[in-house]
Image 1: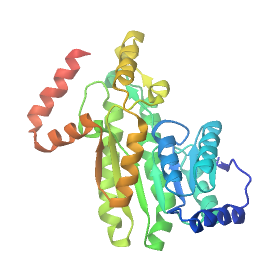
Image 2: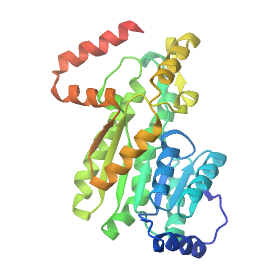
Image 3: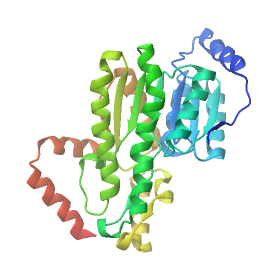
Image 4: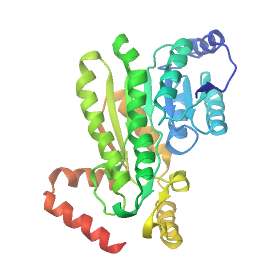
Length: 294
């Protein structure tokens, strides 16, 4: 089910947006961001709002989506909030119909919603695979299927899909997560090639270790679920303390410059460089070395 969480009529929404534009603020919207209640999604929504774009904050967390939309409206043009489960294809289709009726075709779609999972293959249940594939991969595809055709018809727009630095860094204990993010990376590059002729850009973002709430909603299986192991992982994120606002800045730059693959953070950039130059045998050894440390 999807539903808007503000009551502002469409005409009032766009009249206010035009006032911002008349005042000299760039309005590149509407910009829709999924997973906008917290972390990278929230910072991305706020960054677009500050740049003058009307933002649609989308999340399964209604209170979080409302809070982000409210902050975006205070920072820039009008903003709206919607509730949707991106794994639910029909719900995303319904959302697109509602958004197009109220706001028109998107200028930018940021498929950011995602979840984490850590566990060896034999410890991960089929239901876990359904869960993470449904959100991390199919959520991205659902967004592109629902909102992309209107962009193609207009001959403009930009799609940003969220992958990860692990998309090109195999590990023994994050097989399910890596699989989804590697698929998003491959899908995004294919879609970029496909829709280039239609004037629609596609970028894929590959962050490294970013200090977000992703671990609080992640699933841990087998030995990875040991509380001490979870605490150690959380400590790594806290010590690294790489802010999600840096990823948001990279996303805006990717849209502005139509960048294809955007590793964010030093470890992600290093991983991307090594992925491109190291023989497969060496990356296999590195993955096995990481497995022995678990």
